[in-house]
Length: 126
Image (cartoon, rainbow, N blue to C red; front, side, top):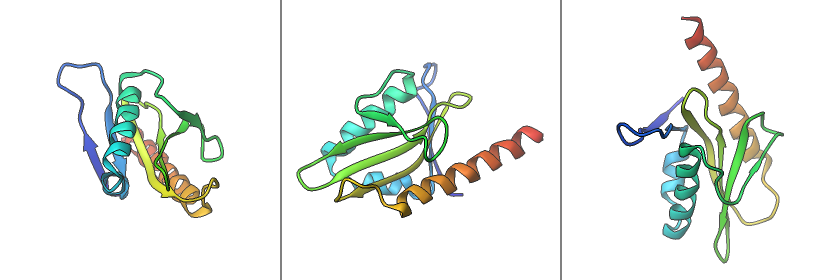
């Protein structure tokens, strides 16, 4: 599973953020204002503060939430797993044109969550 790790400021209390799969590349392609807003939401999660415009997505798994933003034409989403041992995992980032989230995007997040749980279980066994 490809990963992009963003470490917090040294000496701070913030969590590390790990972008799974192509999530970092996808969010990097969002419009600047959207990136700024979603980045602020991710920083809130890192600091343990409730982010603006976030909701639980229990259909993907426990502890999974989405950050939301939009512009005039598109909705943007970041699906993440809340802190596990001081790490926030970004499962999937995507944009959509309709109110409904596609099954493809939900499935991507579910598969990454499943792979992450497997990887963490294997690490704990070692």
